[in-house]
Length: 194
Image 1 (cartoon, rainbow, N blue to C red):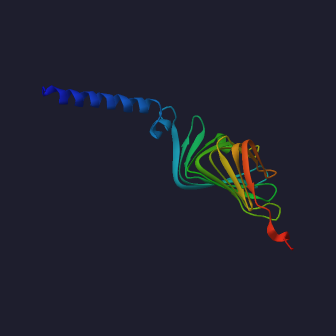
Image 2: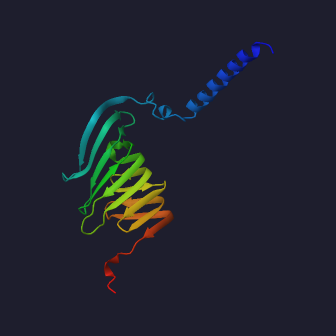
């Protein structure tokens, strides 16, 4: 057996590995490729940021806390790391939203959240405690609704539902599952007086 074969094998392995990783990077497999900033101009960044947005009447309609945020000038957008949103509604309910990542566009008119998105509405007299979990959510601030096209679970006391293509209307607290809806309902046992 000639001594050139191990060297040839190592060279072929190195070239094949390099081509494999080049392919992965160019196809956007690694997250570094997805967050390119070469086309955008970083305008500002903050650590441990807190901000509030008010409507024309002076009422707060959005509050944001984030571990880190990068604001880009063109196109106008902000990328958040571990954002927490508070959304007070006209009907006195307050929604809290947390995710691993988020991005807002046009001053917060459209917000995209991804990675372990959790929406929570604490119980108030008209509405039960509600927790919604998904992996991707798009919130439209001016219309006050959100949509998720990924698998989403909605949990309330005695009720658990899941499905795809979920729309949450924050104005009237309506949650609609449009596709592959499944659920489990537990009746309240308080009326069992045999």
